[in-house]
Length: 165
Image 1 (cartoon, rainbow, N blue to C red):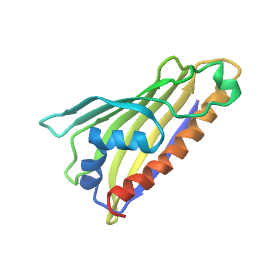
Image 2: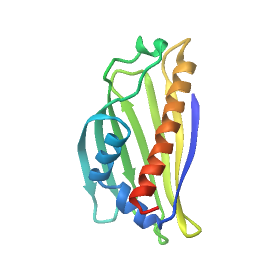
Image 3: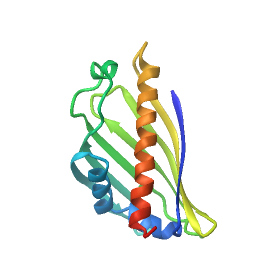
């Protein structure tokens, strides 16, 4: 198991960042930007208390290393879920995120948070990457974590551009 702790920073208030990233339309644009194929919005639920759930599905755009090709089907379908709680009094948000690859022996996800950081926002991803295969599980976890870090760096830039800086 590998631990995740990544921080994305934005020069906008948490409410502004949330208003952007919590929409299915933005998530589908992000999927396309990151190279995902056949992106579709499965669920976008906005509750009266301010909690939000967004679920998307796509075919992965990840080029797999040789050892992983035996474990993960080509054109794997990935379902990504963000389940956000209502904002606190300062507009900060907590939630959970996950990325589930159909047929792959890997699980990725954990808590996430948007919180004020000076005049901006920090988006924190915590959690774990776990592979349920012996012998090469650690290599598969490392590959998945490296790929996640690259995607989050690209996500940060893409989101910042949409926020106007």
